[in-house]
Length: 434
Image 1 (tube, rainbow, N blue to C red):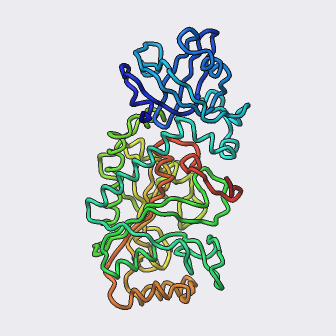
Image 2 (image 1 turned 180 degrees about the horizontal axis):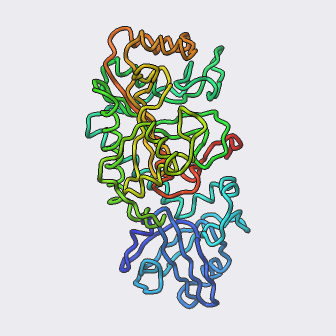
Image 3 (image 1 turned 90 degrees about the vertical axis):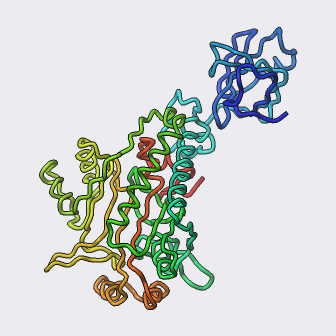
């Protein structure tokens, strides 16, 4: 007999087979209720002493919570059982017994701190709440891929081991690559740009990036999931922002329509921003922070975490959970710069969603002489980027792109306190296992 998931068990099935974990056990003497949990949900199995053989009843009496079981039986209607049906068992097979006591509570009735949960991630992930997070993440990626495939983008894979980094050497993880030193990839950006020279026009990648930053925040990790995009023959950075806006709106709509069970489990009411995302200059963003909140970020060239949060509150009150900040000054050599007198502003943008930076991107500089000038002024070592610079010698079209933090997106959609909850096995400066 083929195994069914709990959600596929109807109230009038003749005979079914289910398998999963003993989520709850209620022993009231001659009656034992076992709630079996699998990936898709729960179903109650009711053992009555006078309806099952003595051996089966003895085994269920000794059954421990979180043991793995397989049950065959008949599904019948029941007003008291979860889902309005229960299974009357014909067989019970204990596939594996769980030790007692459990390292943490799976039912969610007793809270555990995040460190304890991550130390016992294999059992923490059994919780329906966590299943909902990663099912939501899967559906979000499905929606993003669907949008970009429809728009004619090519999905790519770029190396995770590189000679140099896109964002500087201080935040790189070094690795030994045969006889040479190499680094784990911070970003696929340089390779994406090279593909614009190769005529790919429009590409996206779902991949991993590594940041060797020393942090202790709820929104940073050392190993991150990224959704990267690059497109050529653009007029300016607004073309890139259009792609980001339309694809994110499509993703949120998809989740609202197709992830209702997950959103219900997480207790989230997802709003889809139908109006255009506001686009404000970097100077305007700092002006709002000063005038509305008396907050001035320490770094003159950036917005800090508190600033992003305050700006998020400001725009959410106006009905805009997502907005762009455009024109960061003194940016990396690969961004196109606009110079007016002594003022230099890049065509770089950040997308802030629910008070947190979700995306960084912009229009790239495609003139090689200008790039070399920027590199010289910024002290970048040209020898580390020879492979990249070669792509600009023989015809590079105007182009731009961005990288979206998938984990951050899930964190904000699912309203999670910490980004680590959106990652199966997170890595930070103090965690290299499990």
